[in-house]
Image (cartoon, rainbow, N blue to C red; front, side, top):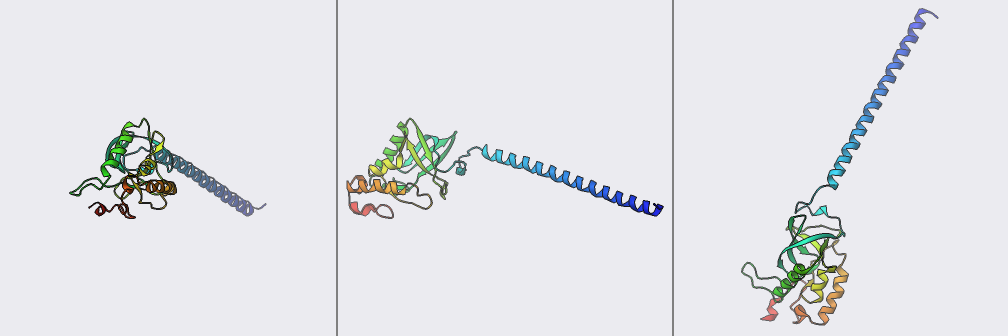
Length: 214
């Protein structure tokens, strides 16, 4: 083998060694990057799962899962304040509408005080209060939690509708999982003319028409 041939072979070997080294370095850096990303993703997932309820981040709660709550105070038949882990927030019961209590110069609608009193009574006396969210938005534009609330295992919405202290209303997809259930209960209350159903025309598709009492 001539000196020229030997020199050419040495050059080729050197090039191959450089290529192998470059590939090894690149693979090592990619592996380190992937490992770093995996740790970062794991930390992000862990931080998300461990995030606490602030009083406004209602997406913290899983849909259709019951959570324990404490009663704080009432507003009217379908609106009141609860707390979770010490954080207070306002609740608007899903798919029901109770008569409005007196506010801002407006007189109370018939059966508003009865509905408020009944809701407060049930929540105050309950040994266990639970609540769940439907599959859609967990809060409305007023930052009120849209919930199904249970008192000692019984759905508060069921009770109010059954006793004629609230109508079925404000049913917006996809937060309508229990709509049919409420409608069936409402049919019976209407047939029996309980409370809000005692006077024809008081309950409307939009709410309550107090003119029928004047």
